[in-house]
Image 1 (cartoon, rainbow, N blue to C red):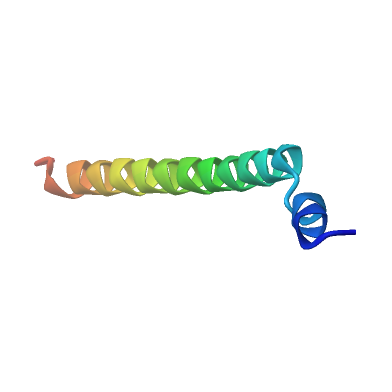
Image 2: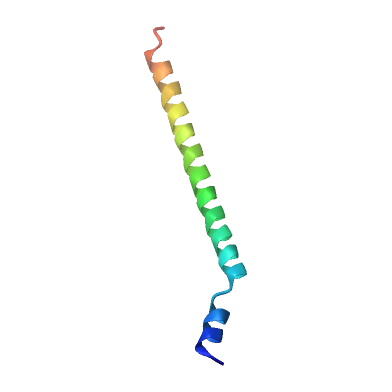
Length: 56
């Protein structure tokens, strides 16, 4: 087996694509969770501010 054949076996484009998709999916889930957490924190801050600042 030549060095080229060994390298060809080592680098499988379909496997590289699957790895890319898995990492992109994990990143997307992380970003979505962070965006939701930020939105909840902002809404909570606005709600608390509204309750504290509205004259009774």
